[in-house]
Length: 291
Length: 270
Image 1 (cartoon, rainbow over the protein chains, first blue to last red):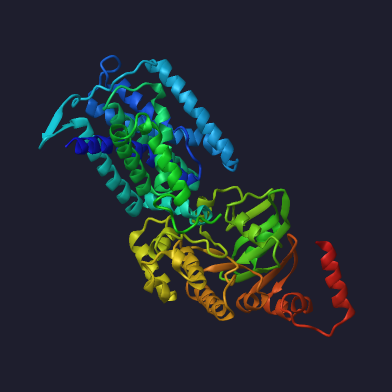
Image 2 (cartoon, one colour):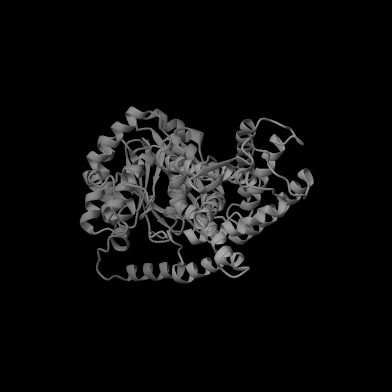
């Protein structure tokens, strides 16, 4: 029973990691850039929602604050690519990576200035509520996380396999030049992907903040999600979610059954093993991308 | 230039679909096109011949808007398009069928073909055009739910052409359709290109190294060397010309001094 309880709370954590990793992978697949500010995007999404719904700030209804924050973060991601990154088109990967790292610092500083560096909790209507099933006691927020992640996964699947824009995103990521030739507005598609990953970050942030207090340095969680994306196979959306869930599950189990401190190391130890024995990640793509 | 256009309009000759004037393009720091001018008339197949590195692909990329020229104009049916974005140019009816295997490898054949119609919204006509593409390339219909990356080279080339057709082009830019294909497949592809030109009224601008098949299919030809047009004439005249026969068709004339000298000169040019 104890074990099951750990698994379930690990699963909830893992879903959040998975969603951040999803943001990494979305951007990497579409634009071949790695957004090291993805964790900070998540943190910002959470604080935007706090700003909308908490009584200390605007005090809007939670059900209104959530879609609003998702929209704001979507616009933020779109604008970030459109206003800044687009002008670096053609620069080396390194400069883009450094730019996103710097962006992470800036976001952390701005969030700290607006919402203070003290830990803050998101006020949700289901805070502290529990569901009991058998002998298990589950927080409603944990159940929500798993349900929302599953729904979002389905939504993404439909978006990428059925919608016109989703297919165009796939096409642009598989062969950018050919996408240009087909009249796909590749630069706009890139901005849309950034918007999409901003929206995913907002969802991840809101879910994470519903579990406990956050502060501006929460964004450093992004490094763990980066490991999750690499474990899953950078470039695979289901891989990102799976990698996140693996890390989420390993952490509580390692701290419960392993020696002290091991849970901090475990995610990176797994990453190391994966990189040694299966360098492409679990869902490594058989087809190498051509340049 | 304006006088030139007016004389064209005066005669009964077919409309000029594409007119390129004094085009200069850089490929990185290298000037790949050094002042190219050419014309493509409606309904024609025009071929641009040249060896590797002559600037043929850069020329097509500049026309389709993937690269911006440094100087010169690209005019399509009266409108200058050299500064337009690639997607605006596709909407105007120029589609670029890239060389080699530039398809979407992880998408199915059917999805690849659907991507060709990205700029269109008329669902009924798109479905009809899909059937049209499959009628020209029946093998693609058989493989429609297969991943495009698993197709053979010839099938991928067919897919690239079929996908390009889906954009309802007025002018199709074909970049080395024979690249990496067996002579038999090359012939098959070129037969289809000629049929598309006749039956679907698609004007073609065809870039090739394989001068023989290209001149057989084309109405008019240009020869490019090191970024410049060095020769242009009707295809049958080019095919009969001594220089073309020597350098592109590999027909050996008597081992004369002239040929030796020309060859040396070409070498020192590089």
